[in-house]
Length: 307
Image (cartoon, rainbow, N blue to C red):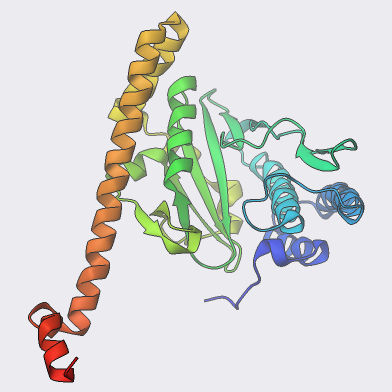
């Protein structure tokens, strides 16, 4: 196992640059890496300049504007490096950014002293990739610096929507920044998994992702086609999302409302079931620690203490 590592958003630019350089040095030309590094160093310096003037983001997901900005920039940085590495794969024809924030720039609003993202931070996949045989698919990049590999249920649901609406398979590339490994899974992987209540993520529902075990050096030789399982389009969740898209295309407001609320109800029922199971597990843990609490009444306790 690798050494303990800070959270990425607690690292400064030099620490993150060194981390990424060590991770990818064997896969990218040093001049290209330094050019990308310089570009995002400028983005970060400008962000710090406005941060020090009192500019803030309205939505920081509970971590504060400095950590929020770092998270965004470090993500843009590794996406840009990864794009260059993917293009070295002999089976890949092209790689393009997809997300609404693909311009990789902030907007600083003087009137309100706020920071926003040019475009919009979205949960669309990060890349659209075209293979030499003209097959296209999406890649969603996830990174972890704490050797804990999870993905939010809501994130998976949004990726299902991208696949359903655009008729493209989505694969998730998880990178272990501590041990320099990666793993790849088709979205279909999550269909048979049960999400869990993740206390590390403020109680949000998450899926476990398998621990990466492929050396990062293998990325340029990766056979991406093995992950393009077309049967994903037979899943009920994909069919339901396609139905929503068709209803929207027809502008059938009744069907749109019906499908949206039906899916929302199913999600709530599923979430309720999972959270009830989580409470049941916690209750059972208490009972296991002291089984006699089931039999002993409060009256007996009061009597023994003469209360």
